[in-house]
Image 1 (cartoon, rainbow, N blue to C red):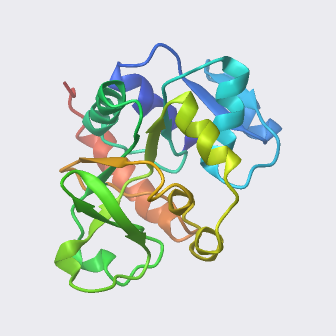
Image 2: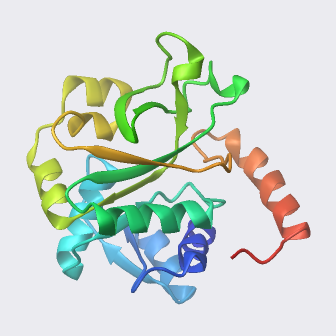
Length: 211
């Protein structure tokens, strides 16, 4: 799954370098055996804290964090997020796709409310009309300054309760949100594995060149 996610980042064709940040020797070995770079970190509270540590080791400034459970991430979305960060490096950048009816009761699907291109709320259980919400995609992009700010802040009770790291920075720094018309999926719970395998098999069978 992680290798397929890294393949999606490479297919986007917009990065100078790609690396997997992990605290697992097993994952690092798999990644390096496939020809990718792995960066070892310590135990981290969130993915963005891990990216902070890895990017410091690498000396990187602008970074797109594609989460490892997004093996079918839309390459156009990845490019759009990277371009948005380059245009607006003082903001966090993330993405959303349309909310399906089946997503509404699913607590593993993170929802985001967007107004004028910026996130105003994140949740797992929708409050108010479903039409006001979208599916939050597993991607973040940020500059070194934005990562340093995030890492320096204490985890909020709400962030811990809902396991939503973006709540630590919401309201403190703008979160630009890019629309992706492709409805994707991530692997959040064990039962998602079979769904993802079926989706990938279907994509591999009818694979086309993406531009």
